[in-house]
Length: 474
Ligand code: ARG
Picture 1 (cartoon, rainbow, N blue to C red):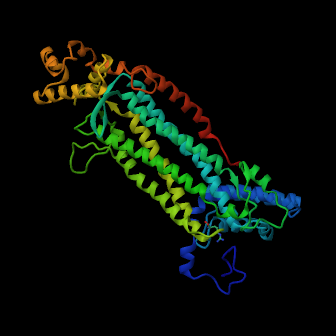
Picture 2: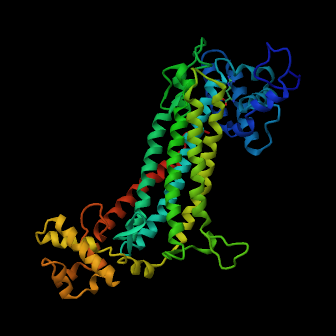
Picture 3: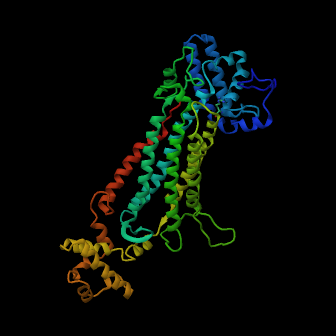
C-alpha cells in the first residue's frame, strides 16, 4: 500500500496490489454513479451510529455536514474519483477522510461494502425504474395520440405477415400500448420486491454493534430491512428481475420497430416518418431510413444479453458475497441508459409519423381479407361453420382464378358456388361493415376501440405520478 493511496483494506498485506490486479478489480469507472445513493446511505448509517452512542452529537453534526459537502462536491464535479480509488465506496471514504481526518474513519463501523453495494444498487434501480416508467408513458402517449386519430382508419390485419382480416389501425396501434402497460405493471411489481434494505447485514453476519436496520430502511425509502443478513448480501434477484423487465421492454420495442420498418417501406407505404426522425444515405440521395426503429430492434440484443449475463454470473455462486457480483452493475446501468436513450427517440418518431390513410384504406380488403365475413354470414343462416368455410374457400378459389375481388362475382357465380349463397351476401363484403360488426369487448370495431382508448388513457394517467416519485431522500 502506497502512502497516498486510500484503500479500504491493506493492514494484513505486505505491499500494494499488482498493477494487473488493480486494473481488473477497479469498478469506480462505472459504479461512480452510485455515489449519491452511497452518501444517502452513509447519512442514515451515521445517525444510527449516533443513536447507538458510537458517535457523539458533535461528531454526528460534523459527519453529516461533511457528507453534505461531499455530496455537493460530487454533484459539481469538484470531487472526482481517481485512478487509485478501487470503487465508489473507496472514493467516498477518501473524500470523507479529506474533510474530517480521523473522524471520517468512524463511519465504516458495522458496515461493509457488501451490504452497502447491495443497498446502493437497489436505491439506484428503484429510482431509475421510475425514470424508465416515465419514458414508457411518453411512448405510450405518442401511440395513443396516433390511435385516437385512426380509430376509424381500416388496415389489413395480418397473421404470418399475410392479409388476414380488416382491423382498425387505431386498434393496431393500441396493441403496441398494451404490452407497455404490462411493462409498467411489471416495474411496479418489481419495485415492491426490491424495496428491502440490506444495510445492517454487514459483510454477511449482521453486526455486534447496536445498529437499527429498520430505522435505516425507513430513512432510505425501503419497506423493511432484510430478514436474513446472508441472503441480503448474496441476493441479486432484484437485478436479474429488473433486467428481465428491461429485456422484455426491449423485445416490445423491437417488435414495434420492426413494424415501423415495414410500414415505411415502399412496398407497404402506410406511414411516412418526419424528416427530424429519419436518416438519409451517404450515397443514395433519395433515401429516407427508419434508423430509430432499426436501433430499437437492434438494441433489444444488448437488453436480453444483460439479463443472460447476470443470470449466468449468479448461477453457481456459493453464499454469500462473491466478487463475481461486481459484474451485476454494468448490465443494469446499460439497460437504464439504453432505454433512456431509445424511448424518447421512439416517442418522437411515433408522434410525428404521418399515417397514409389512403394506402391503408386501399390495402384493407386486399387478399380476400373479407372471406371470414362470408363464412360468418353463412353461419348466421344456419350453415355449419365447417361447410361455410368450404363454400367460402371455393368462392375465394374462383376469384383467385379470375383475378377478381369477392364483390366482383356475379349473382350466377354465387349460385354456382353454393345454393346457400345469394346476392344479399354483398352486405357483408365491405371493410366498413366488417369493422362495424365487431362489437364485442376487446375487438376491433369502432365501439370497443373507443372504449379501449378511454381505458388506456385512464390507466396511463395513473402512471404519471409514480413515474416522478422520488424514492431516495436527498
Ligand atoms: N465493488 C464491489 C462490488 O461491486 C463492492 C463490494 C466489494 N466487496 C468485497 N468484499 N470486495 O461488488
